[in-house]
Image (cartoon, rainbow, N blue to C red; front, side, top):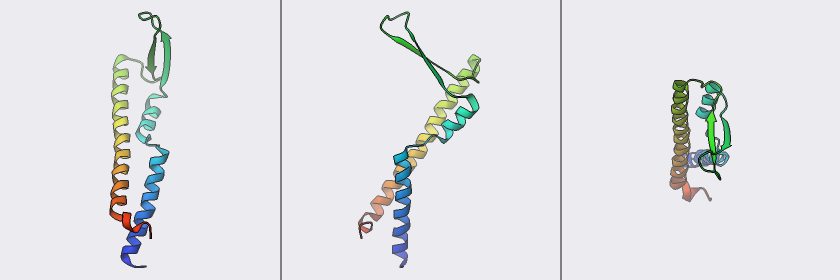
Length: 108
């Protein structure tokens, strides 16, 4: 197998792996670590006292009890979302970059 064919084959294998990851959409590594630290998110809803046909939703975590902990947990959760999303974006860019580069060769 010639060098360029080997590179094309490696690129095809990588595109398939990245495509599988994108299809699974399981970019939650840092959010999962966050859950381990603070506990699973608990969501509750109650009928609103202010608006009769509305509900208020509240979120809590078992290990965030004080106001400082709740704020810290919230900030960390937002950062976890951002980091996980960056990994997904990186995969998307790499996926389309490889497709763009090797598009002509992947159909032989």
